[in-house]
Length: 217
Image 1 (cartoon, rainbow, N blue to C red):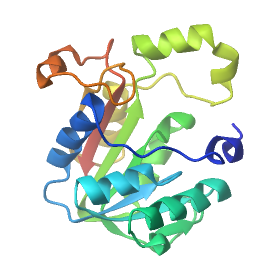
Image 2 (cartoon, rainbow, N blue to C red):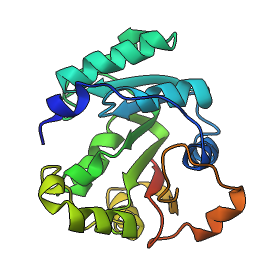
Image 3 (cartoon, rainbow, N blue to C red):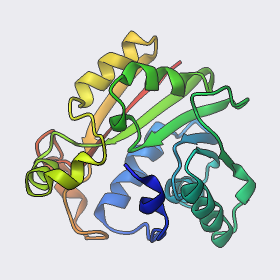
């Protein structure tokens, strides 16, 4: 995919509604004993801002697309964060960084070898640190409908459609992570749509918009 075009127009940062509240709840629980995070493929910096402003974490991001990197720096400045915390570089090379937690959002599904991406997360984590990987639910009903209607468009994203909670949990265990756990979360809603918390009973492999899996090094 041409990520230059994807990032050039910027993104809106508004952490409101059911899905953002669920993201806060789920990640807040996973990261409750961590003060800092390193995000791989941070793109325009949306989740860096979320992790800092909503969850109160110190955060550094790595991005290898120039437009995404520039946008992330701009977004961090806009929200009073240090733009130097965005690093322009390739996560597969030895960038000398270690963190209590290495995470990514919508990254691993763009690669065929998910073990390699899990191990790449692991190399940025200190001993007993956490790897957290959040993924769009490519096997969910929303994604299947979108793919059916706009298959030519979505092929440009080079998405590995053979990934779900069970497969990612198995990969993490195979790579040596411990205490592996994961769940489906979020619902296929309009951005910032509001629903009562009781609707999380409908979060599952078929309906949910995303899932997240974590493991300890």
